Image (cartoon, rainbow over all chains, first blue to last red; front, side, top):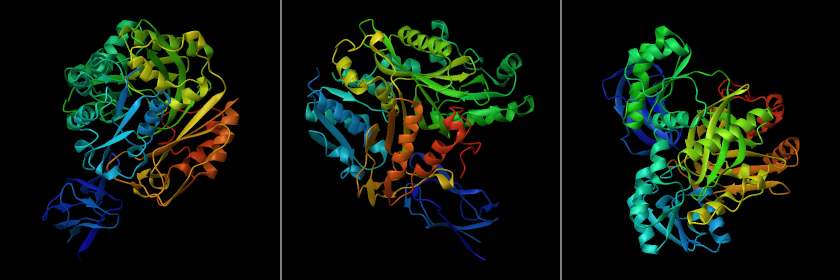
Length: 71
Length: 447
């Protein structure tokens, strides 16, 4: 079942660490946000395959926004 | 006195410098990004110039735009504050070449002390004690192994071009040296564009004590005593105080003497800070900050002197307004950094809009604030909203005032470090002055 990966803080997308089709383990960083001079990874909540990345580098995301979808 | 100064910074430190300029009758120019148009610092100068979009590299880190703002407004000097361009020697050099006074040391000294390996070499030559380690960058993993054989484990691998704790890797034994070396090289390359490393003995539970120094380029270099800044998270300070509790008069005397010796050796001009780590009766040079420090108000409260006004005077070519024997510590002062961070979530950033802002006031309470109600605290800049400083005739009094002030401080709309500070003030370890730099990470103040 598909699962949304949500940003747990507000920030700017600093790095995209995975692409659709990649397999990730629980806890792997899917993207990295930058907020107030800190780099904060948004981690995969469980193991799975990345179905979709919903953000681009430099984009601002709000806490709770979906940044990626796992298959 | 210089006729005018442009403040190349934002938030609380920009306001602090603008206030100093006003006090001396110096015309002031503020700069601001599109994110900061409604912020107090953009409204409190004689003139304000929009320098670019919110991301720092397109505004506060854009030296060209700032020099352009200085040209347009006819500003004669630039005060860089801390962070941003304050320790960028190329910017200081560009100021000089543009005929502007850079309020700080010469660009050569910024360059020299910004290179942590070169800075250490200079301090060693001046007779300032250093943490045992490699005498310069290590050439290879084998070289690091050779140094480890001399100083032993655990040790630290540090980026030669680094600072602020970024790129540091702790190595506990011989077996983990090779992978740690690779990690440190990679981090250093990513963060600073250079993979050069140096090796230092790892000190367990040390204290961070620093000395405020000031040179006037006319032969005078003085110290303004020490500050203790051991309460840190992610190698960033949260609480600072002066005088340093539980540091013997003998250590204090040697520490301040070493700080002046080091500053004198590099021909230091204007305000700077020599940072040391202290373990028992031993102390070692850490690095020099060639700029005004966030926590300078602690020293101002304890000595009664105005460091920022003195910076503007010395930058104008005047002699230092004080002699060493006039600079005396009276009572005690503590500073708590009010960060927009959530201490309940491991100090995660907490951007948002300040719905309510009611700072405390009263005897011995000083608030250096960068914000006002309605300000949008954005993700683009560091999370420091304000500094709360309390002073008293004794350390106990300063702590009591801090507790009252923290309880009275009302901030709504985002999370702040205030609950953390209250726990620290109430803790036995802090009240007894038994602090070290690893306490926060060890969970000593968890609720």
